[in-house]
Amino acid sequence: MNLDIGSKGKIEKHTFELVVEIKDNEGKPTGVKKSYGTDDAVRLHRFWLRNSGSIKKKRKKADAAQGKDVDAALKEVETHTNKIRQQRKLED
Image 1 (cartoon, helix red, strand yellow):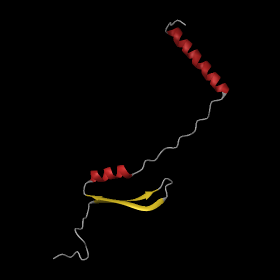
Image 2 (cartoon, rainbow, N blue to C red):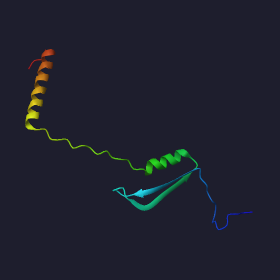
Image 3 (spheres, one colour):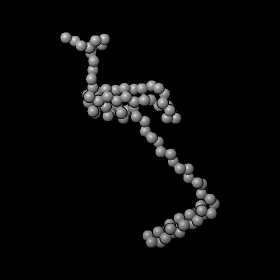
């Protein structure tokens, strides 16, 4: 005796079921949902990796170096290279 009244076809019950709400670029919900059901945890994990977005880190904008800072840095580099050349007894 079949007690599935009003059902059309086979009713599937999955061990794992995931319902995801889709969002736009700004993070606002669009009203669209994706659902996925499976008995295999590995397949569910693959579905999640495929459909989940990655959070992008915001980089800090580097300030441009000022003229005095650049000159001091170049002078420090030059003295350091001269010191290394003297240690290694390299000719200029």
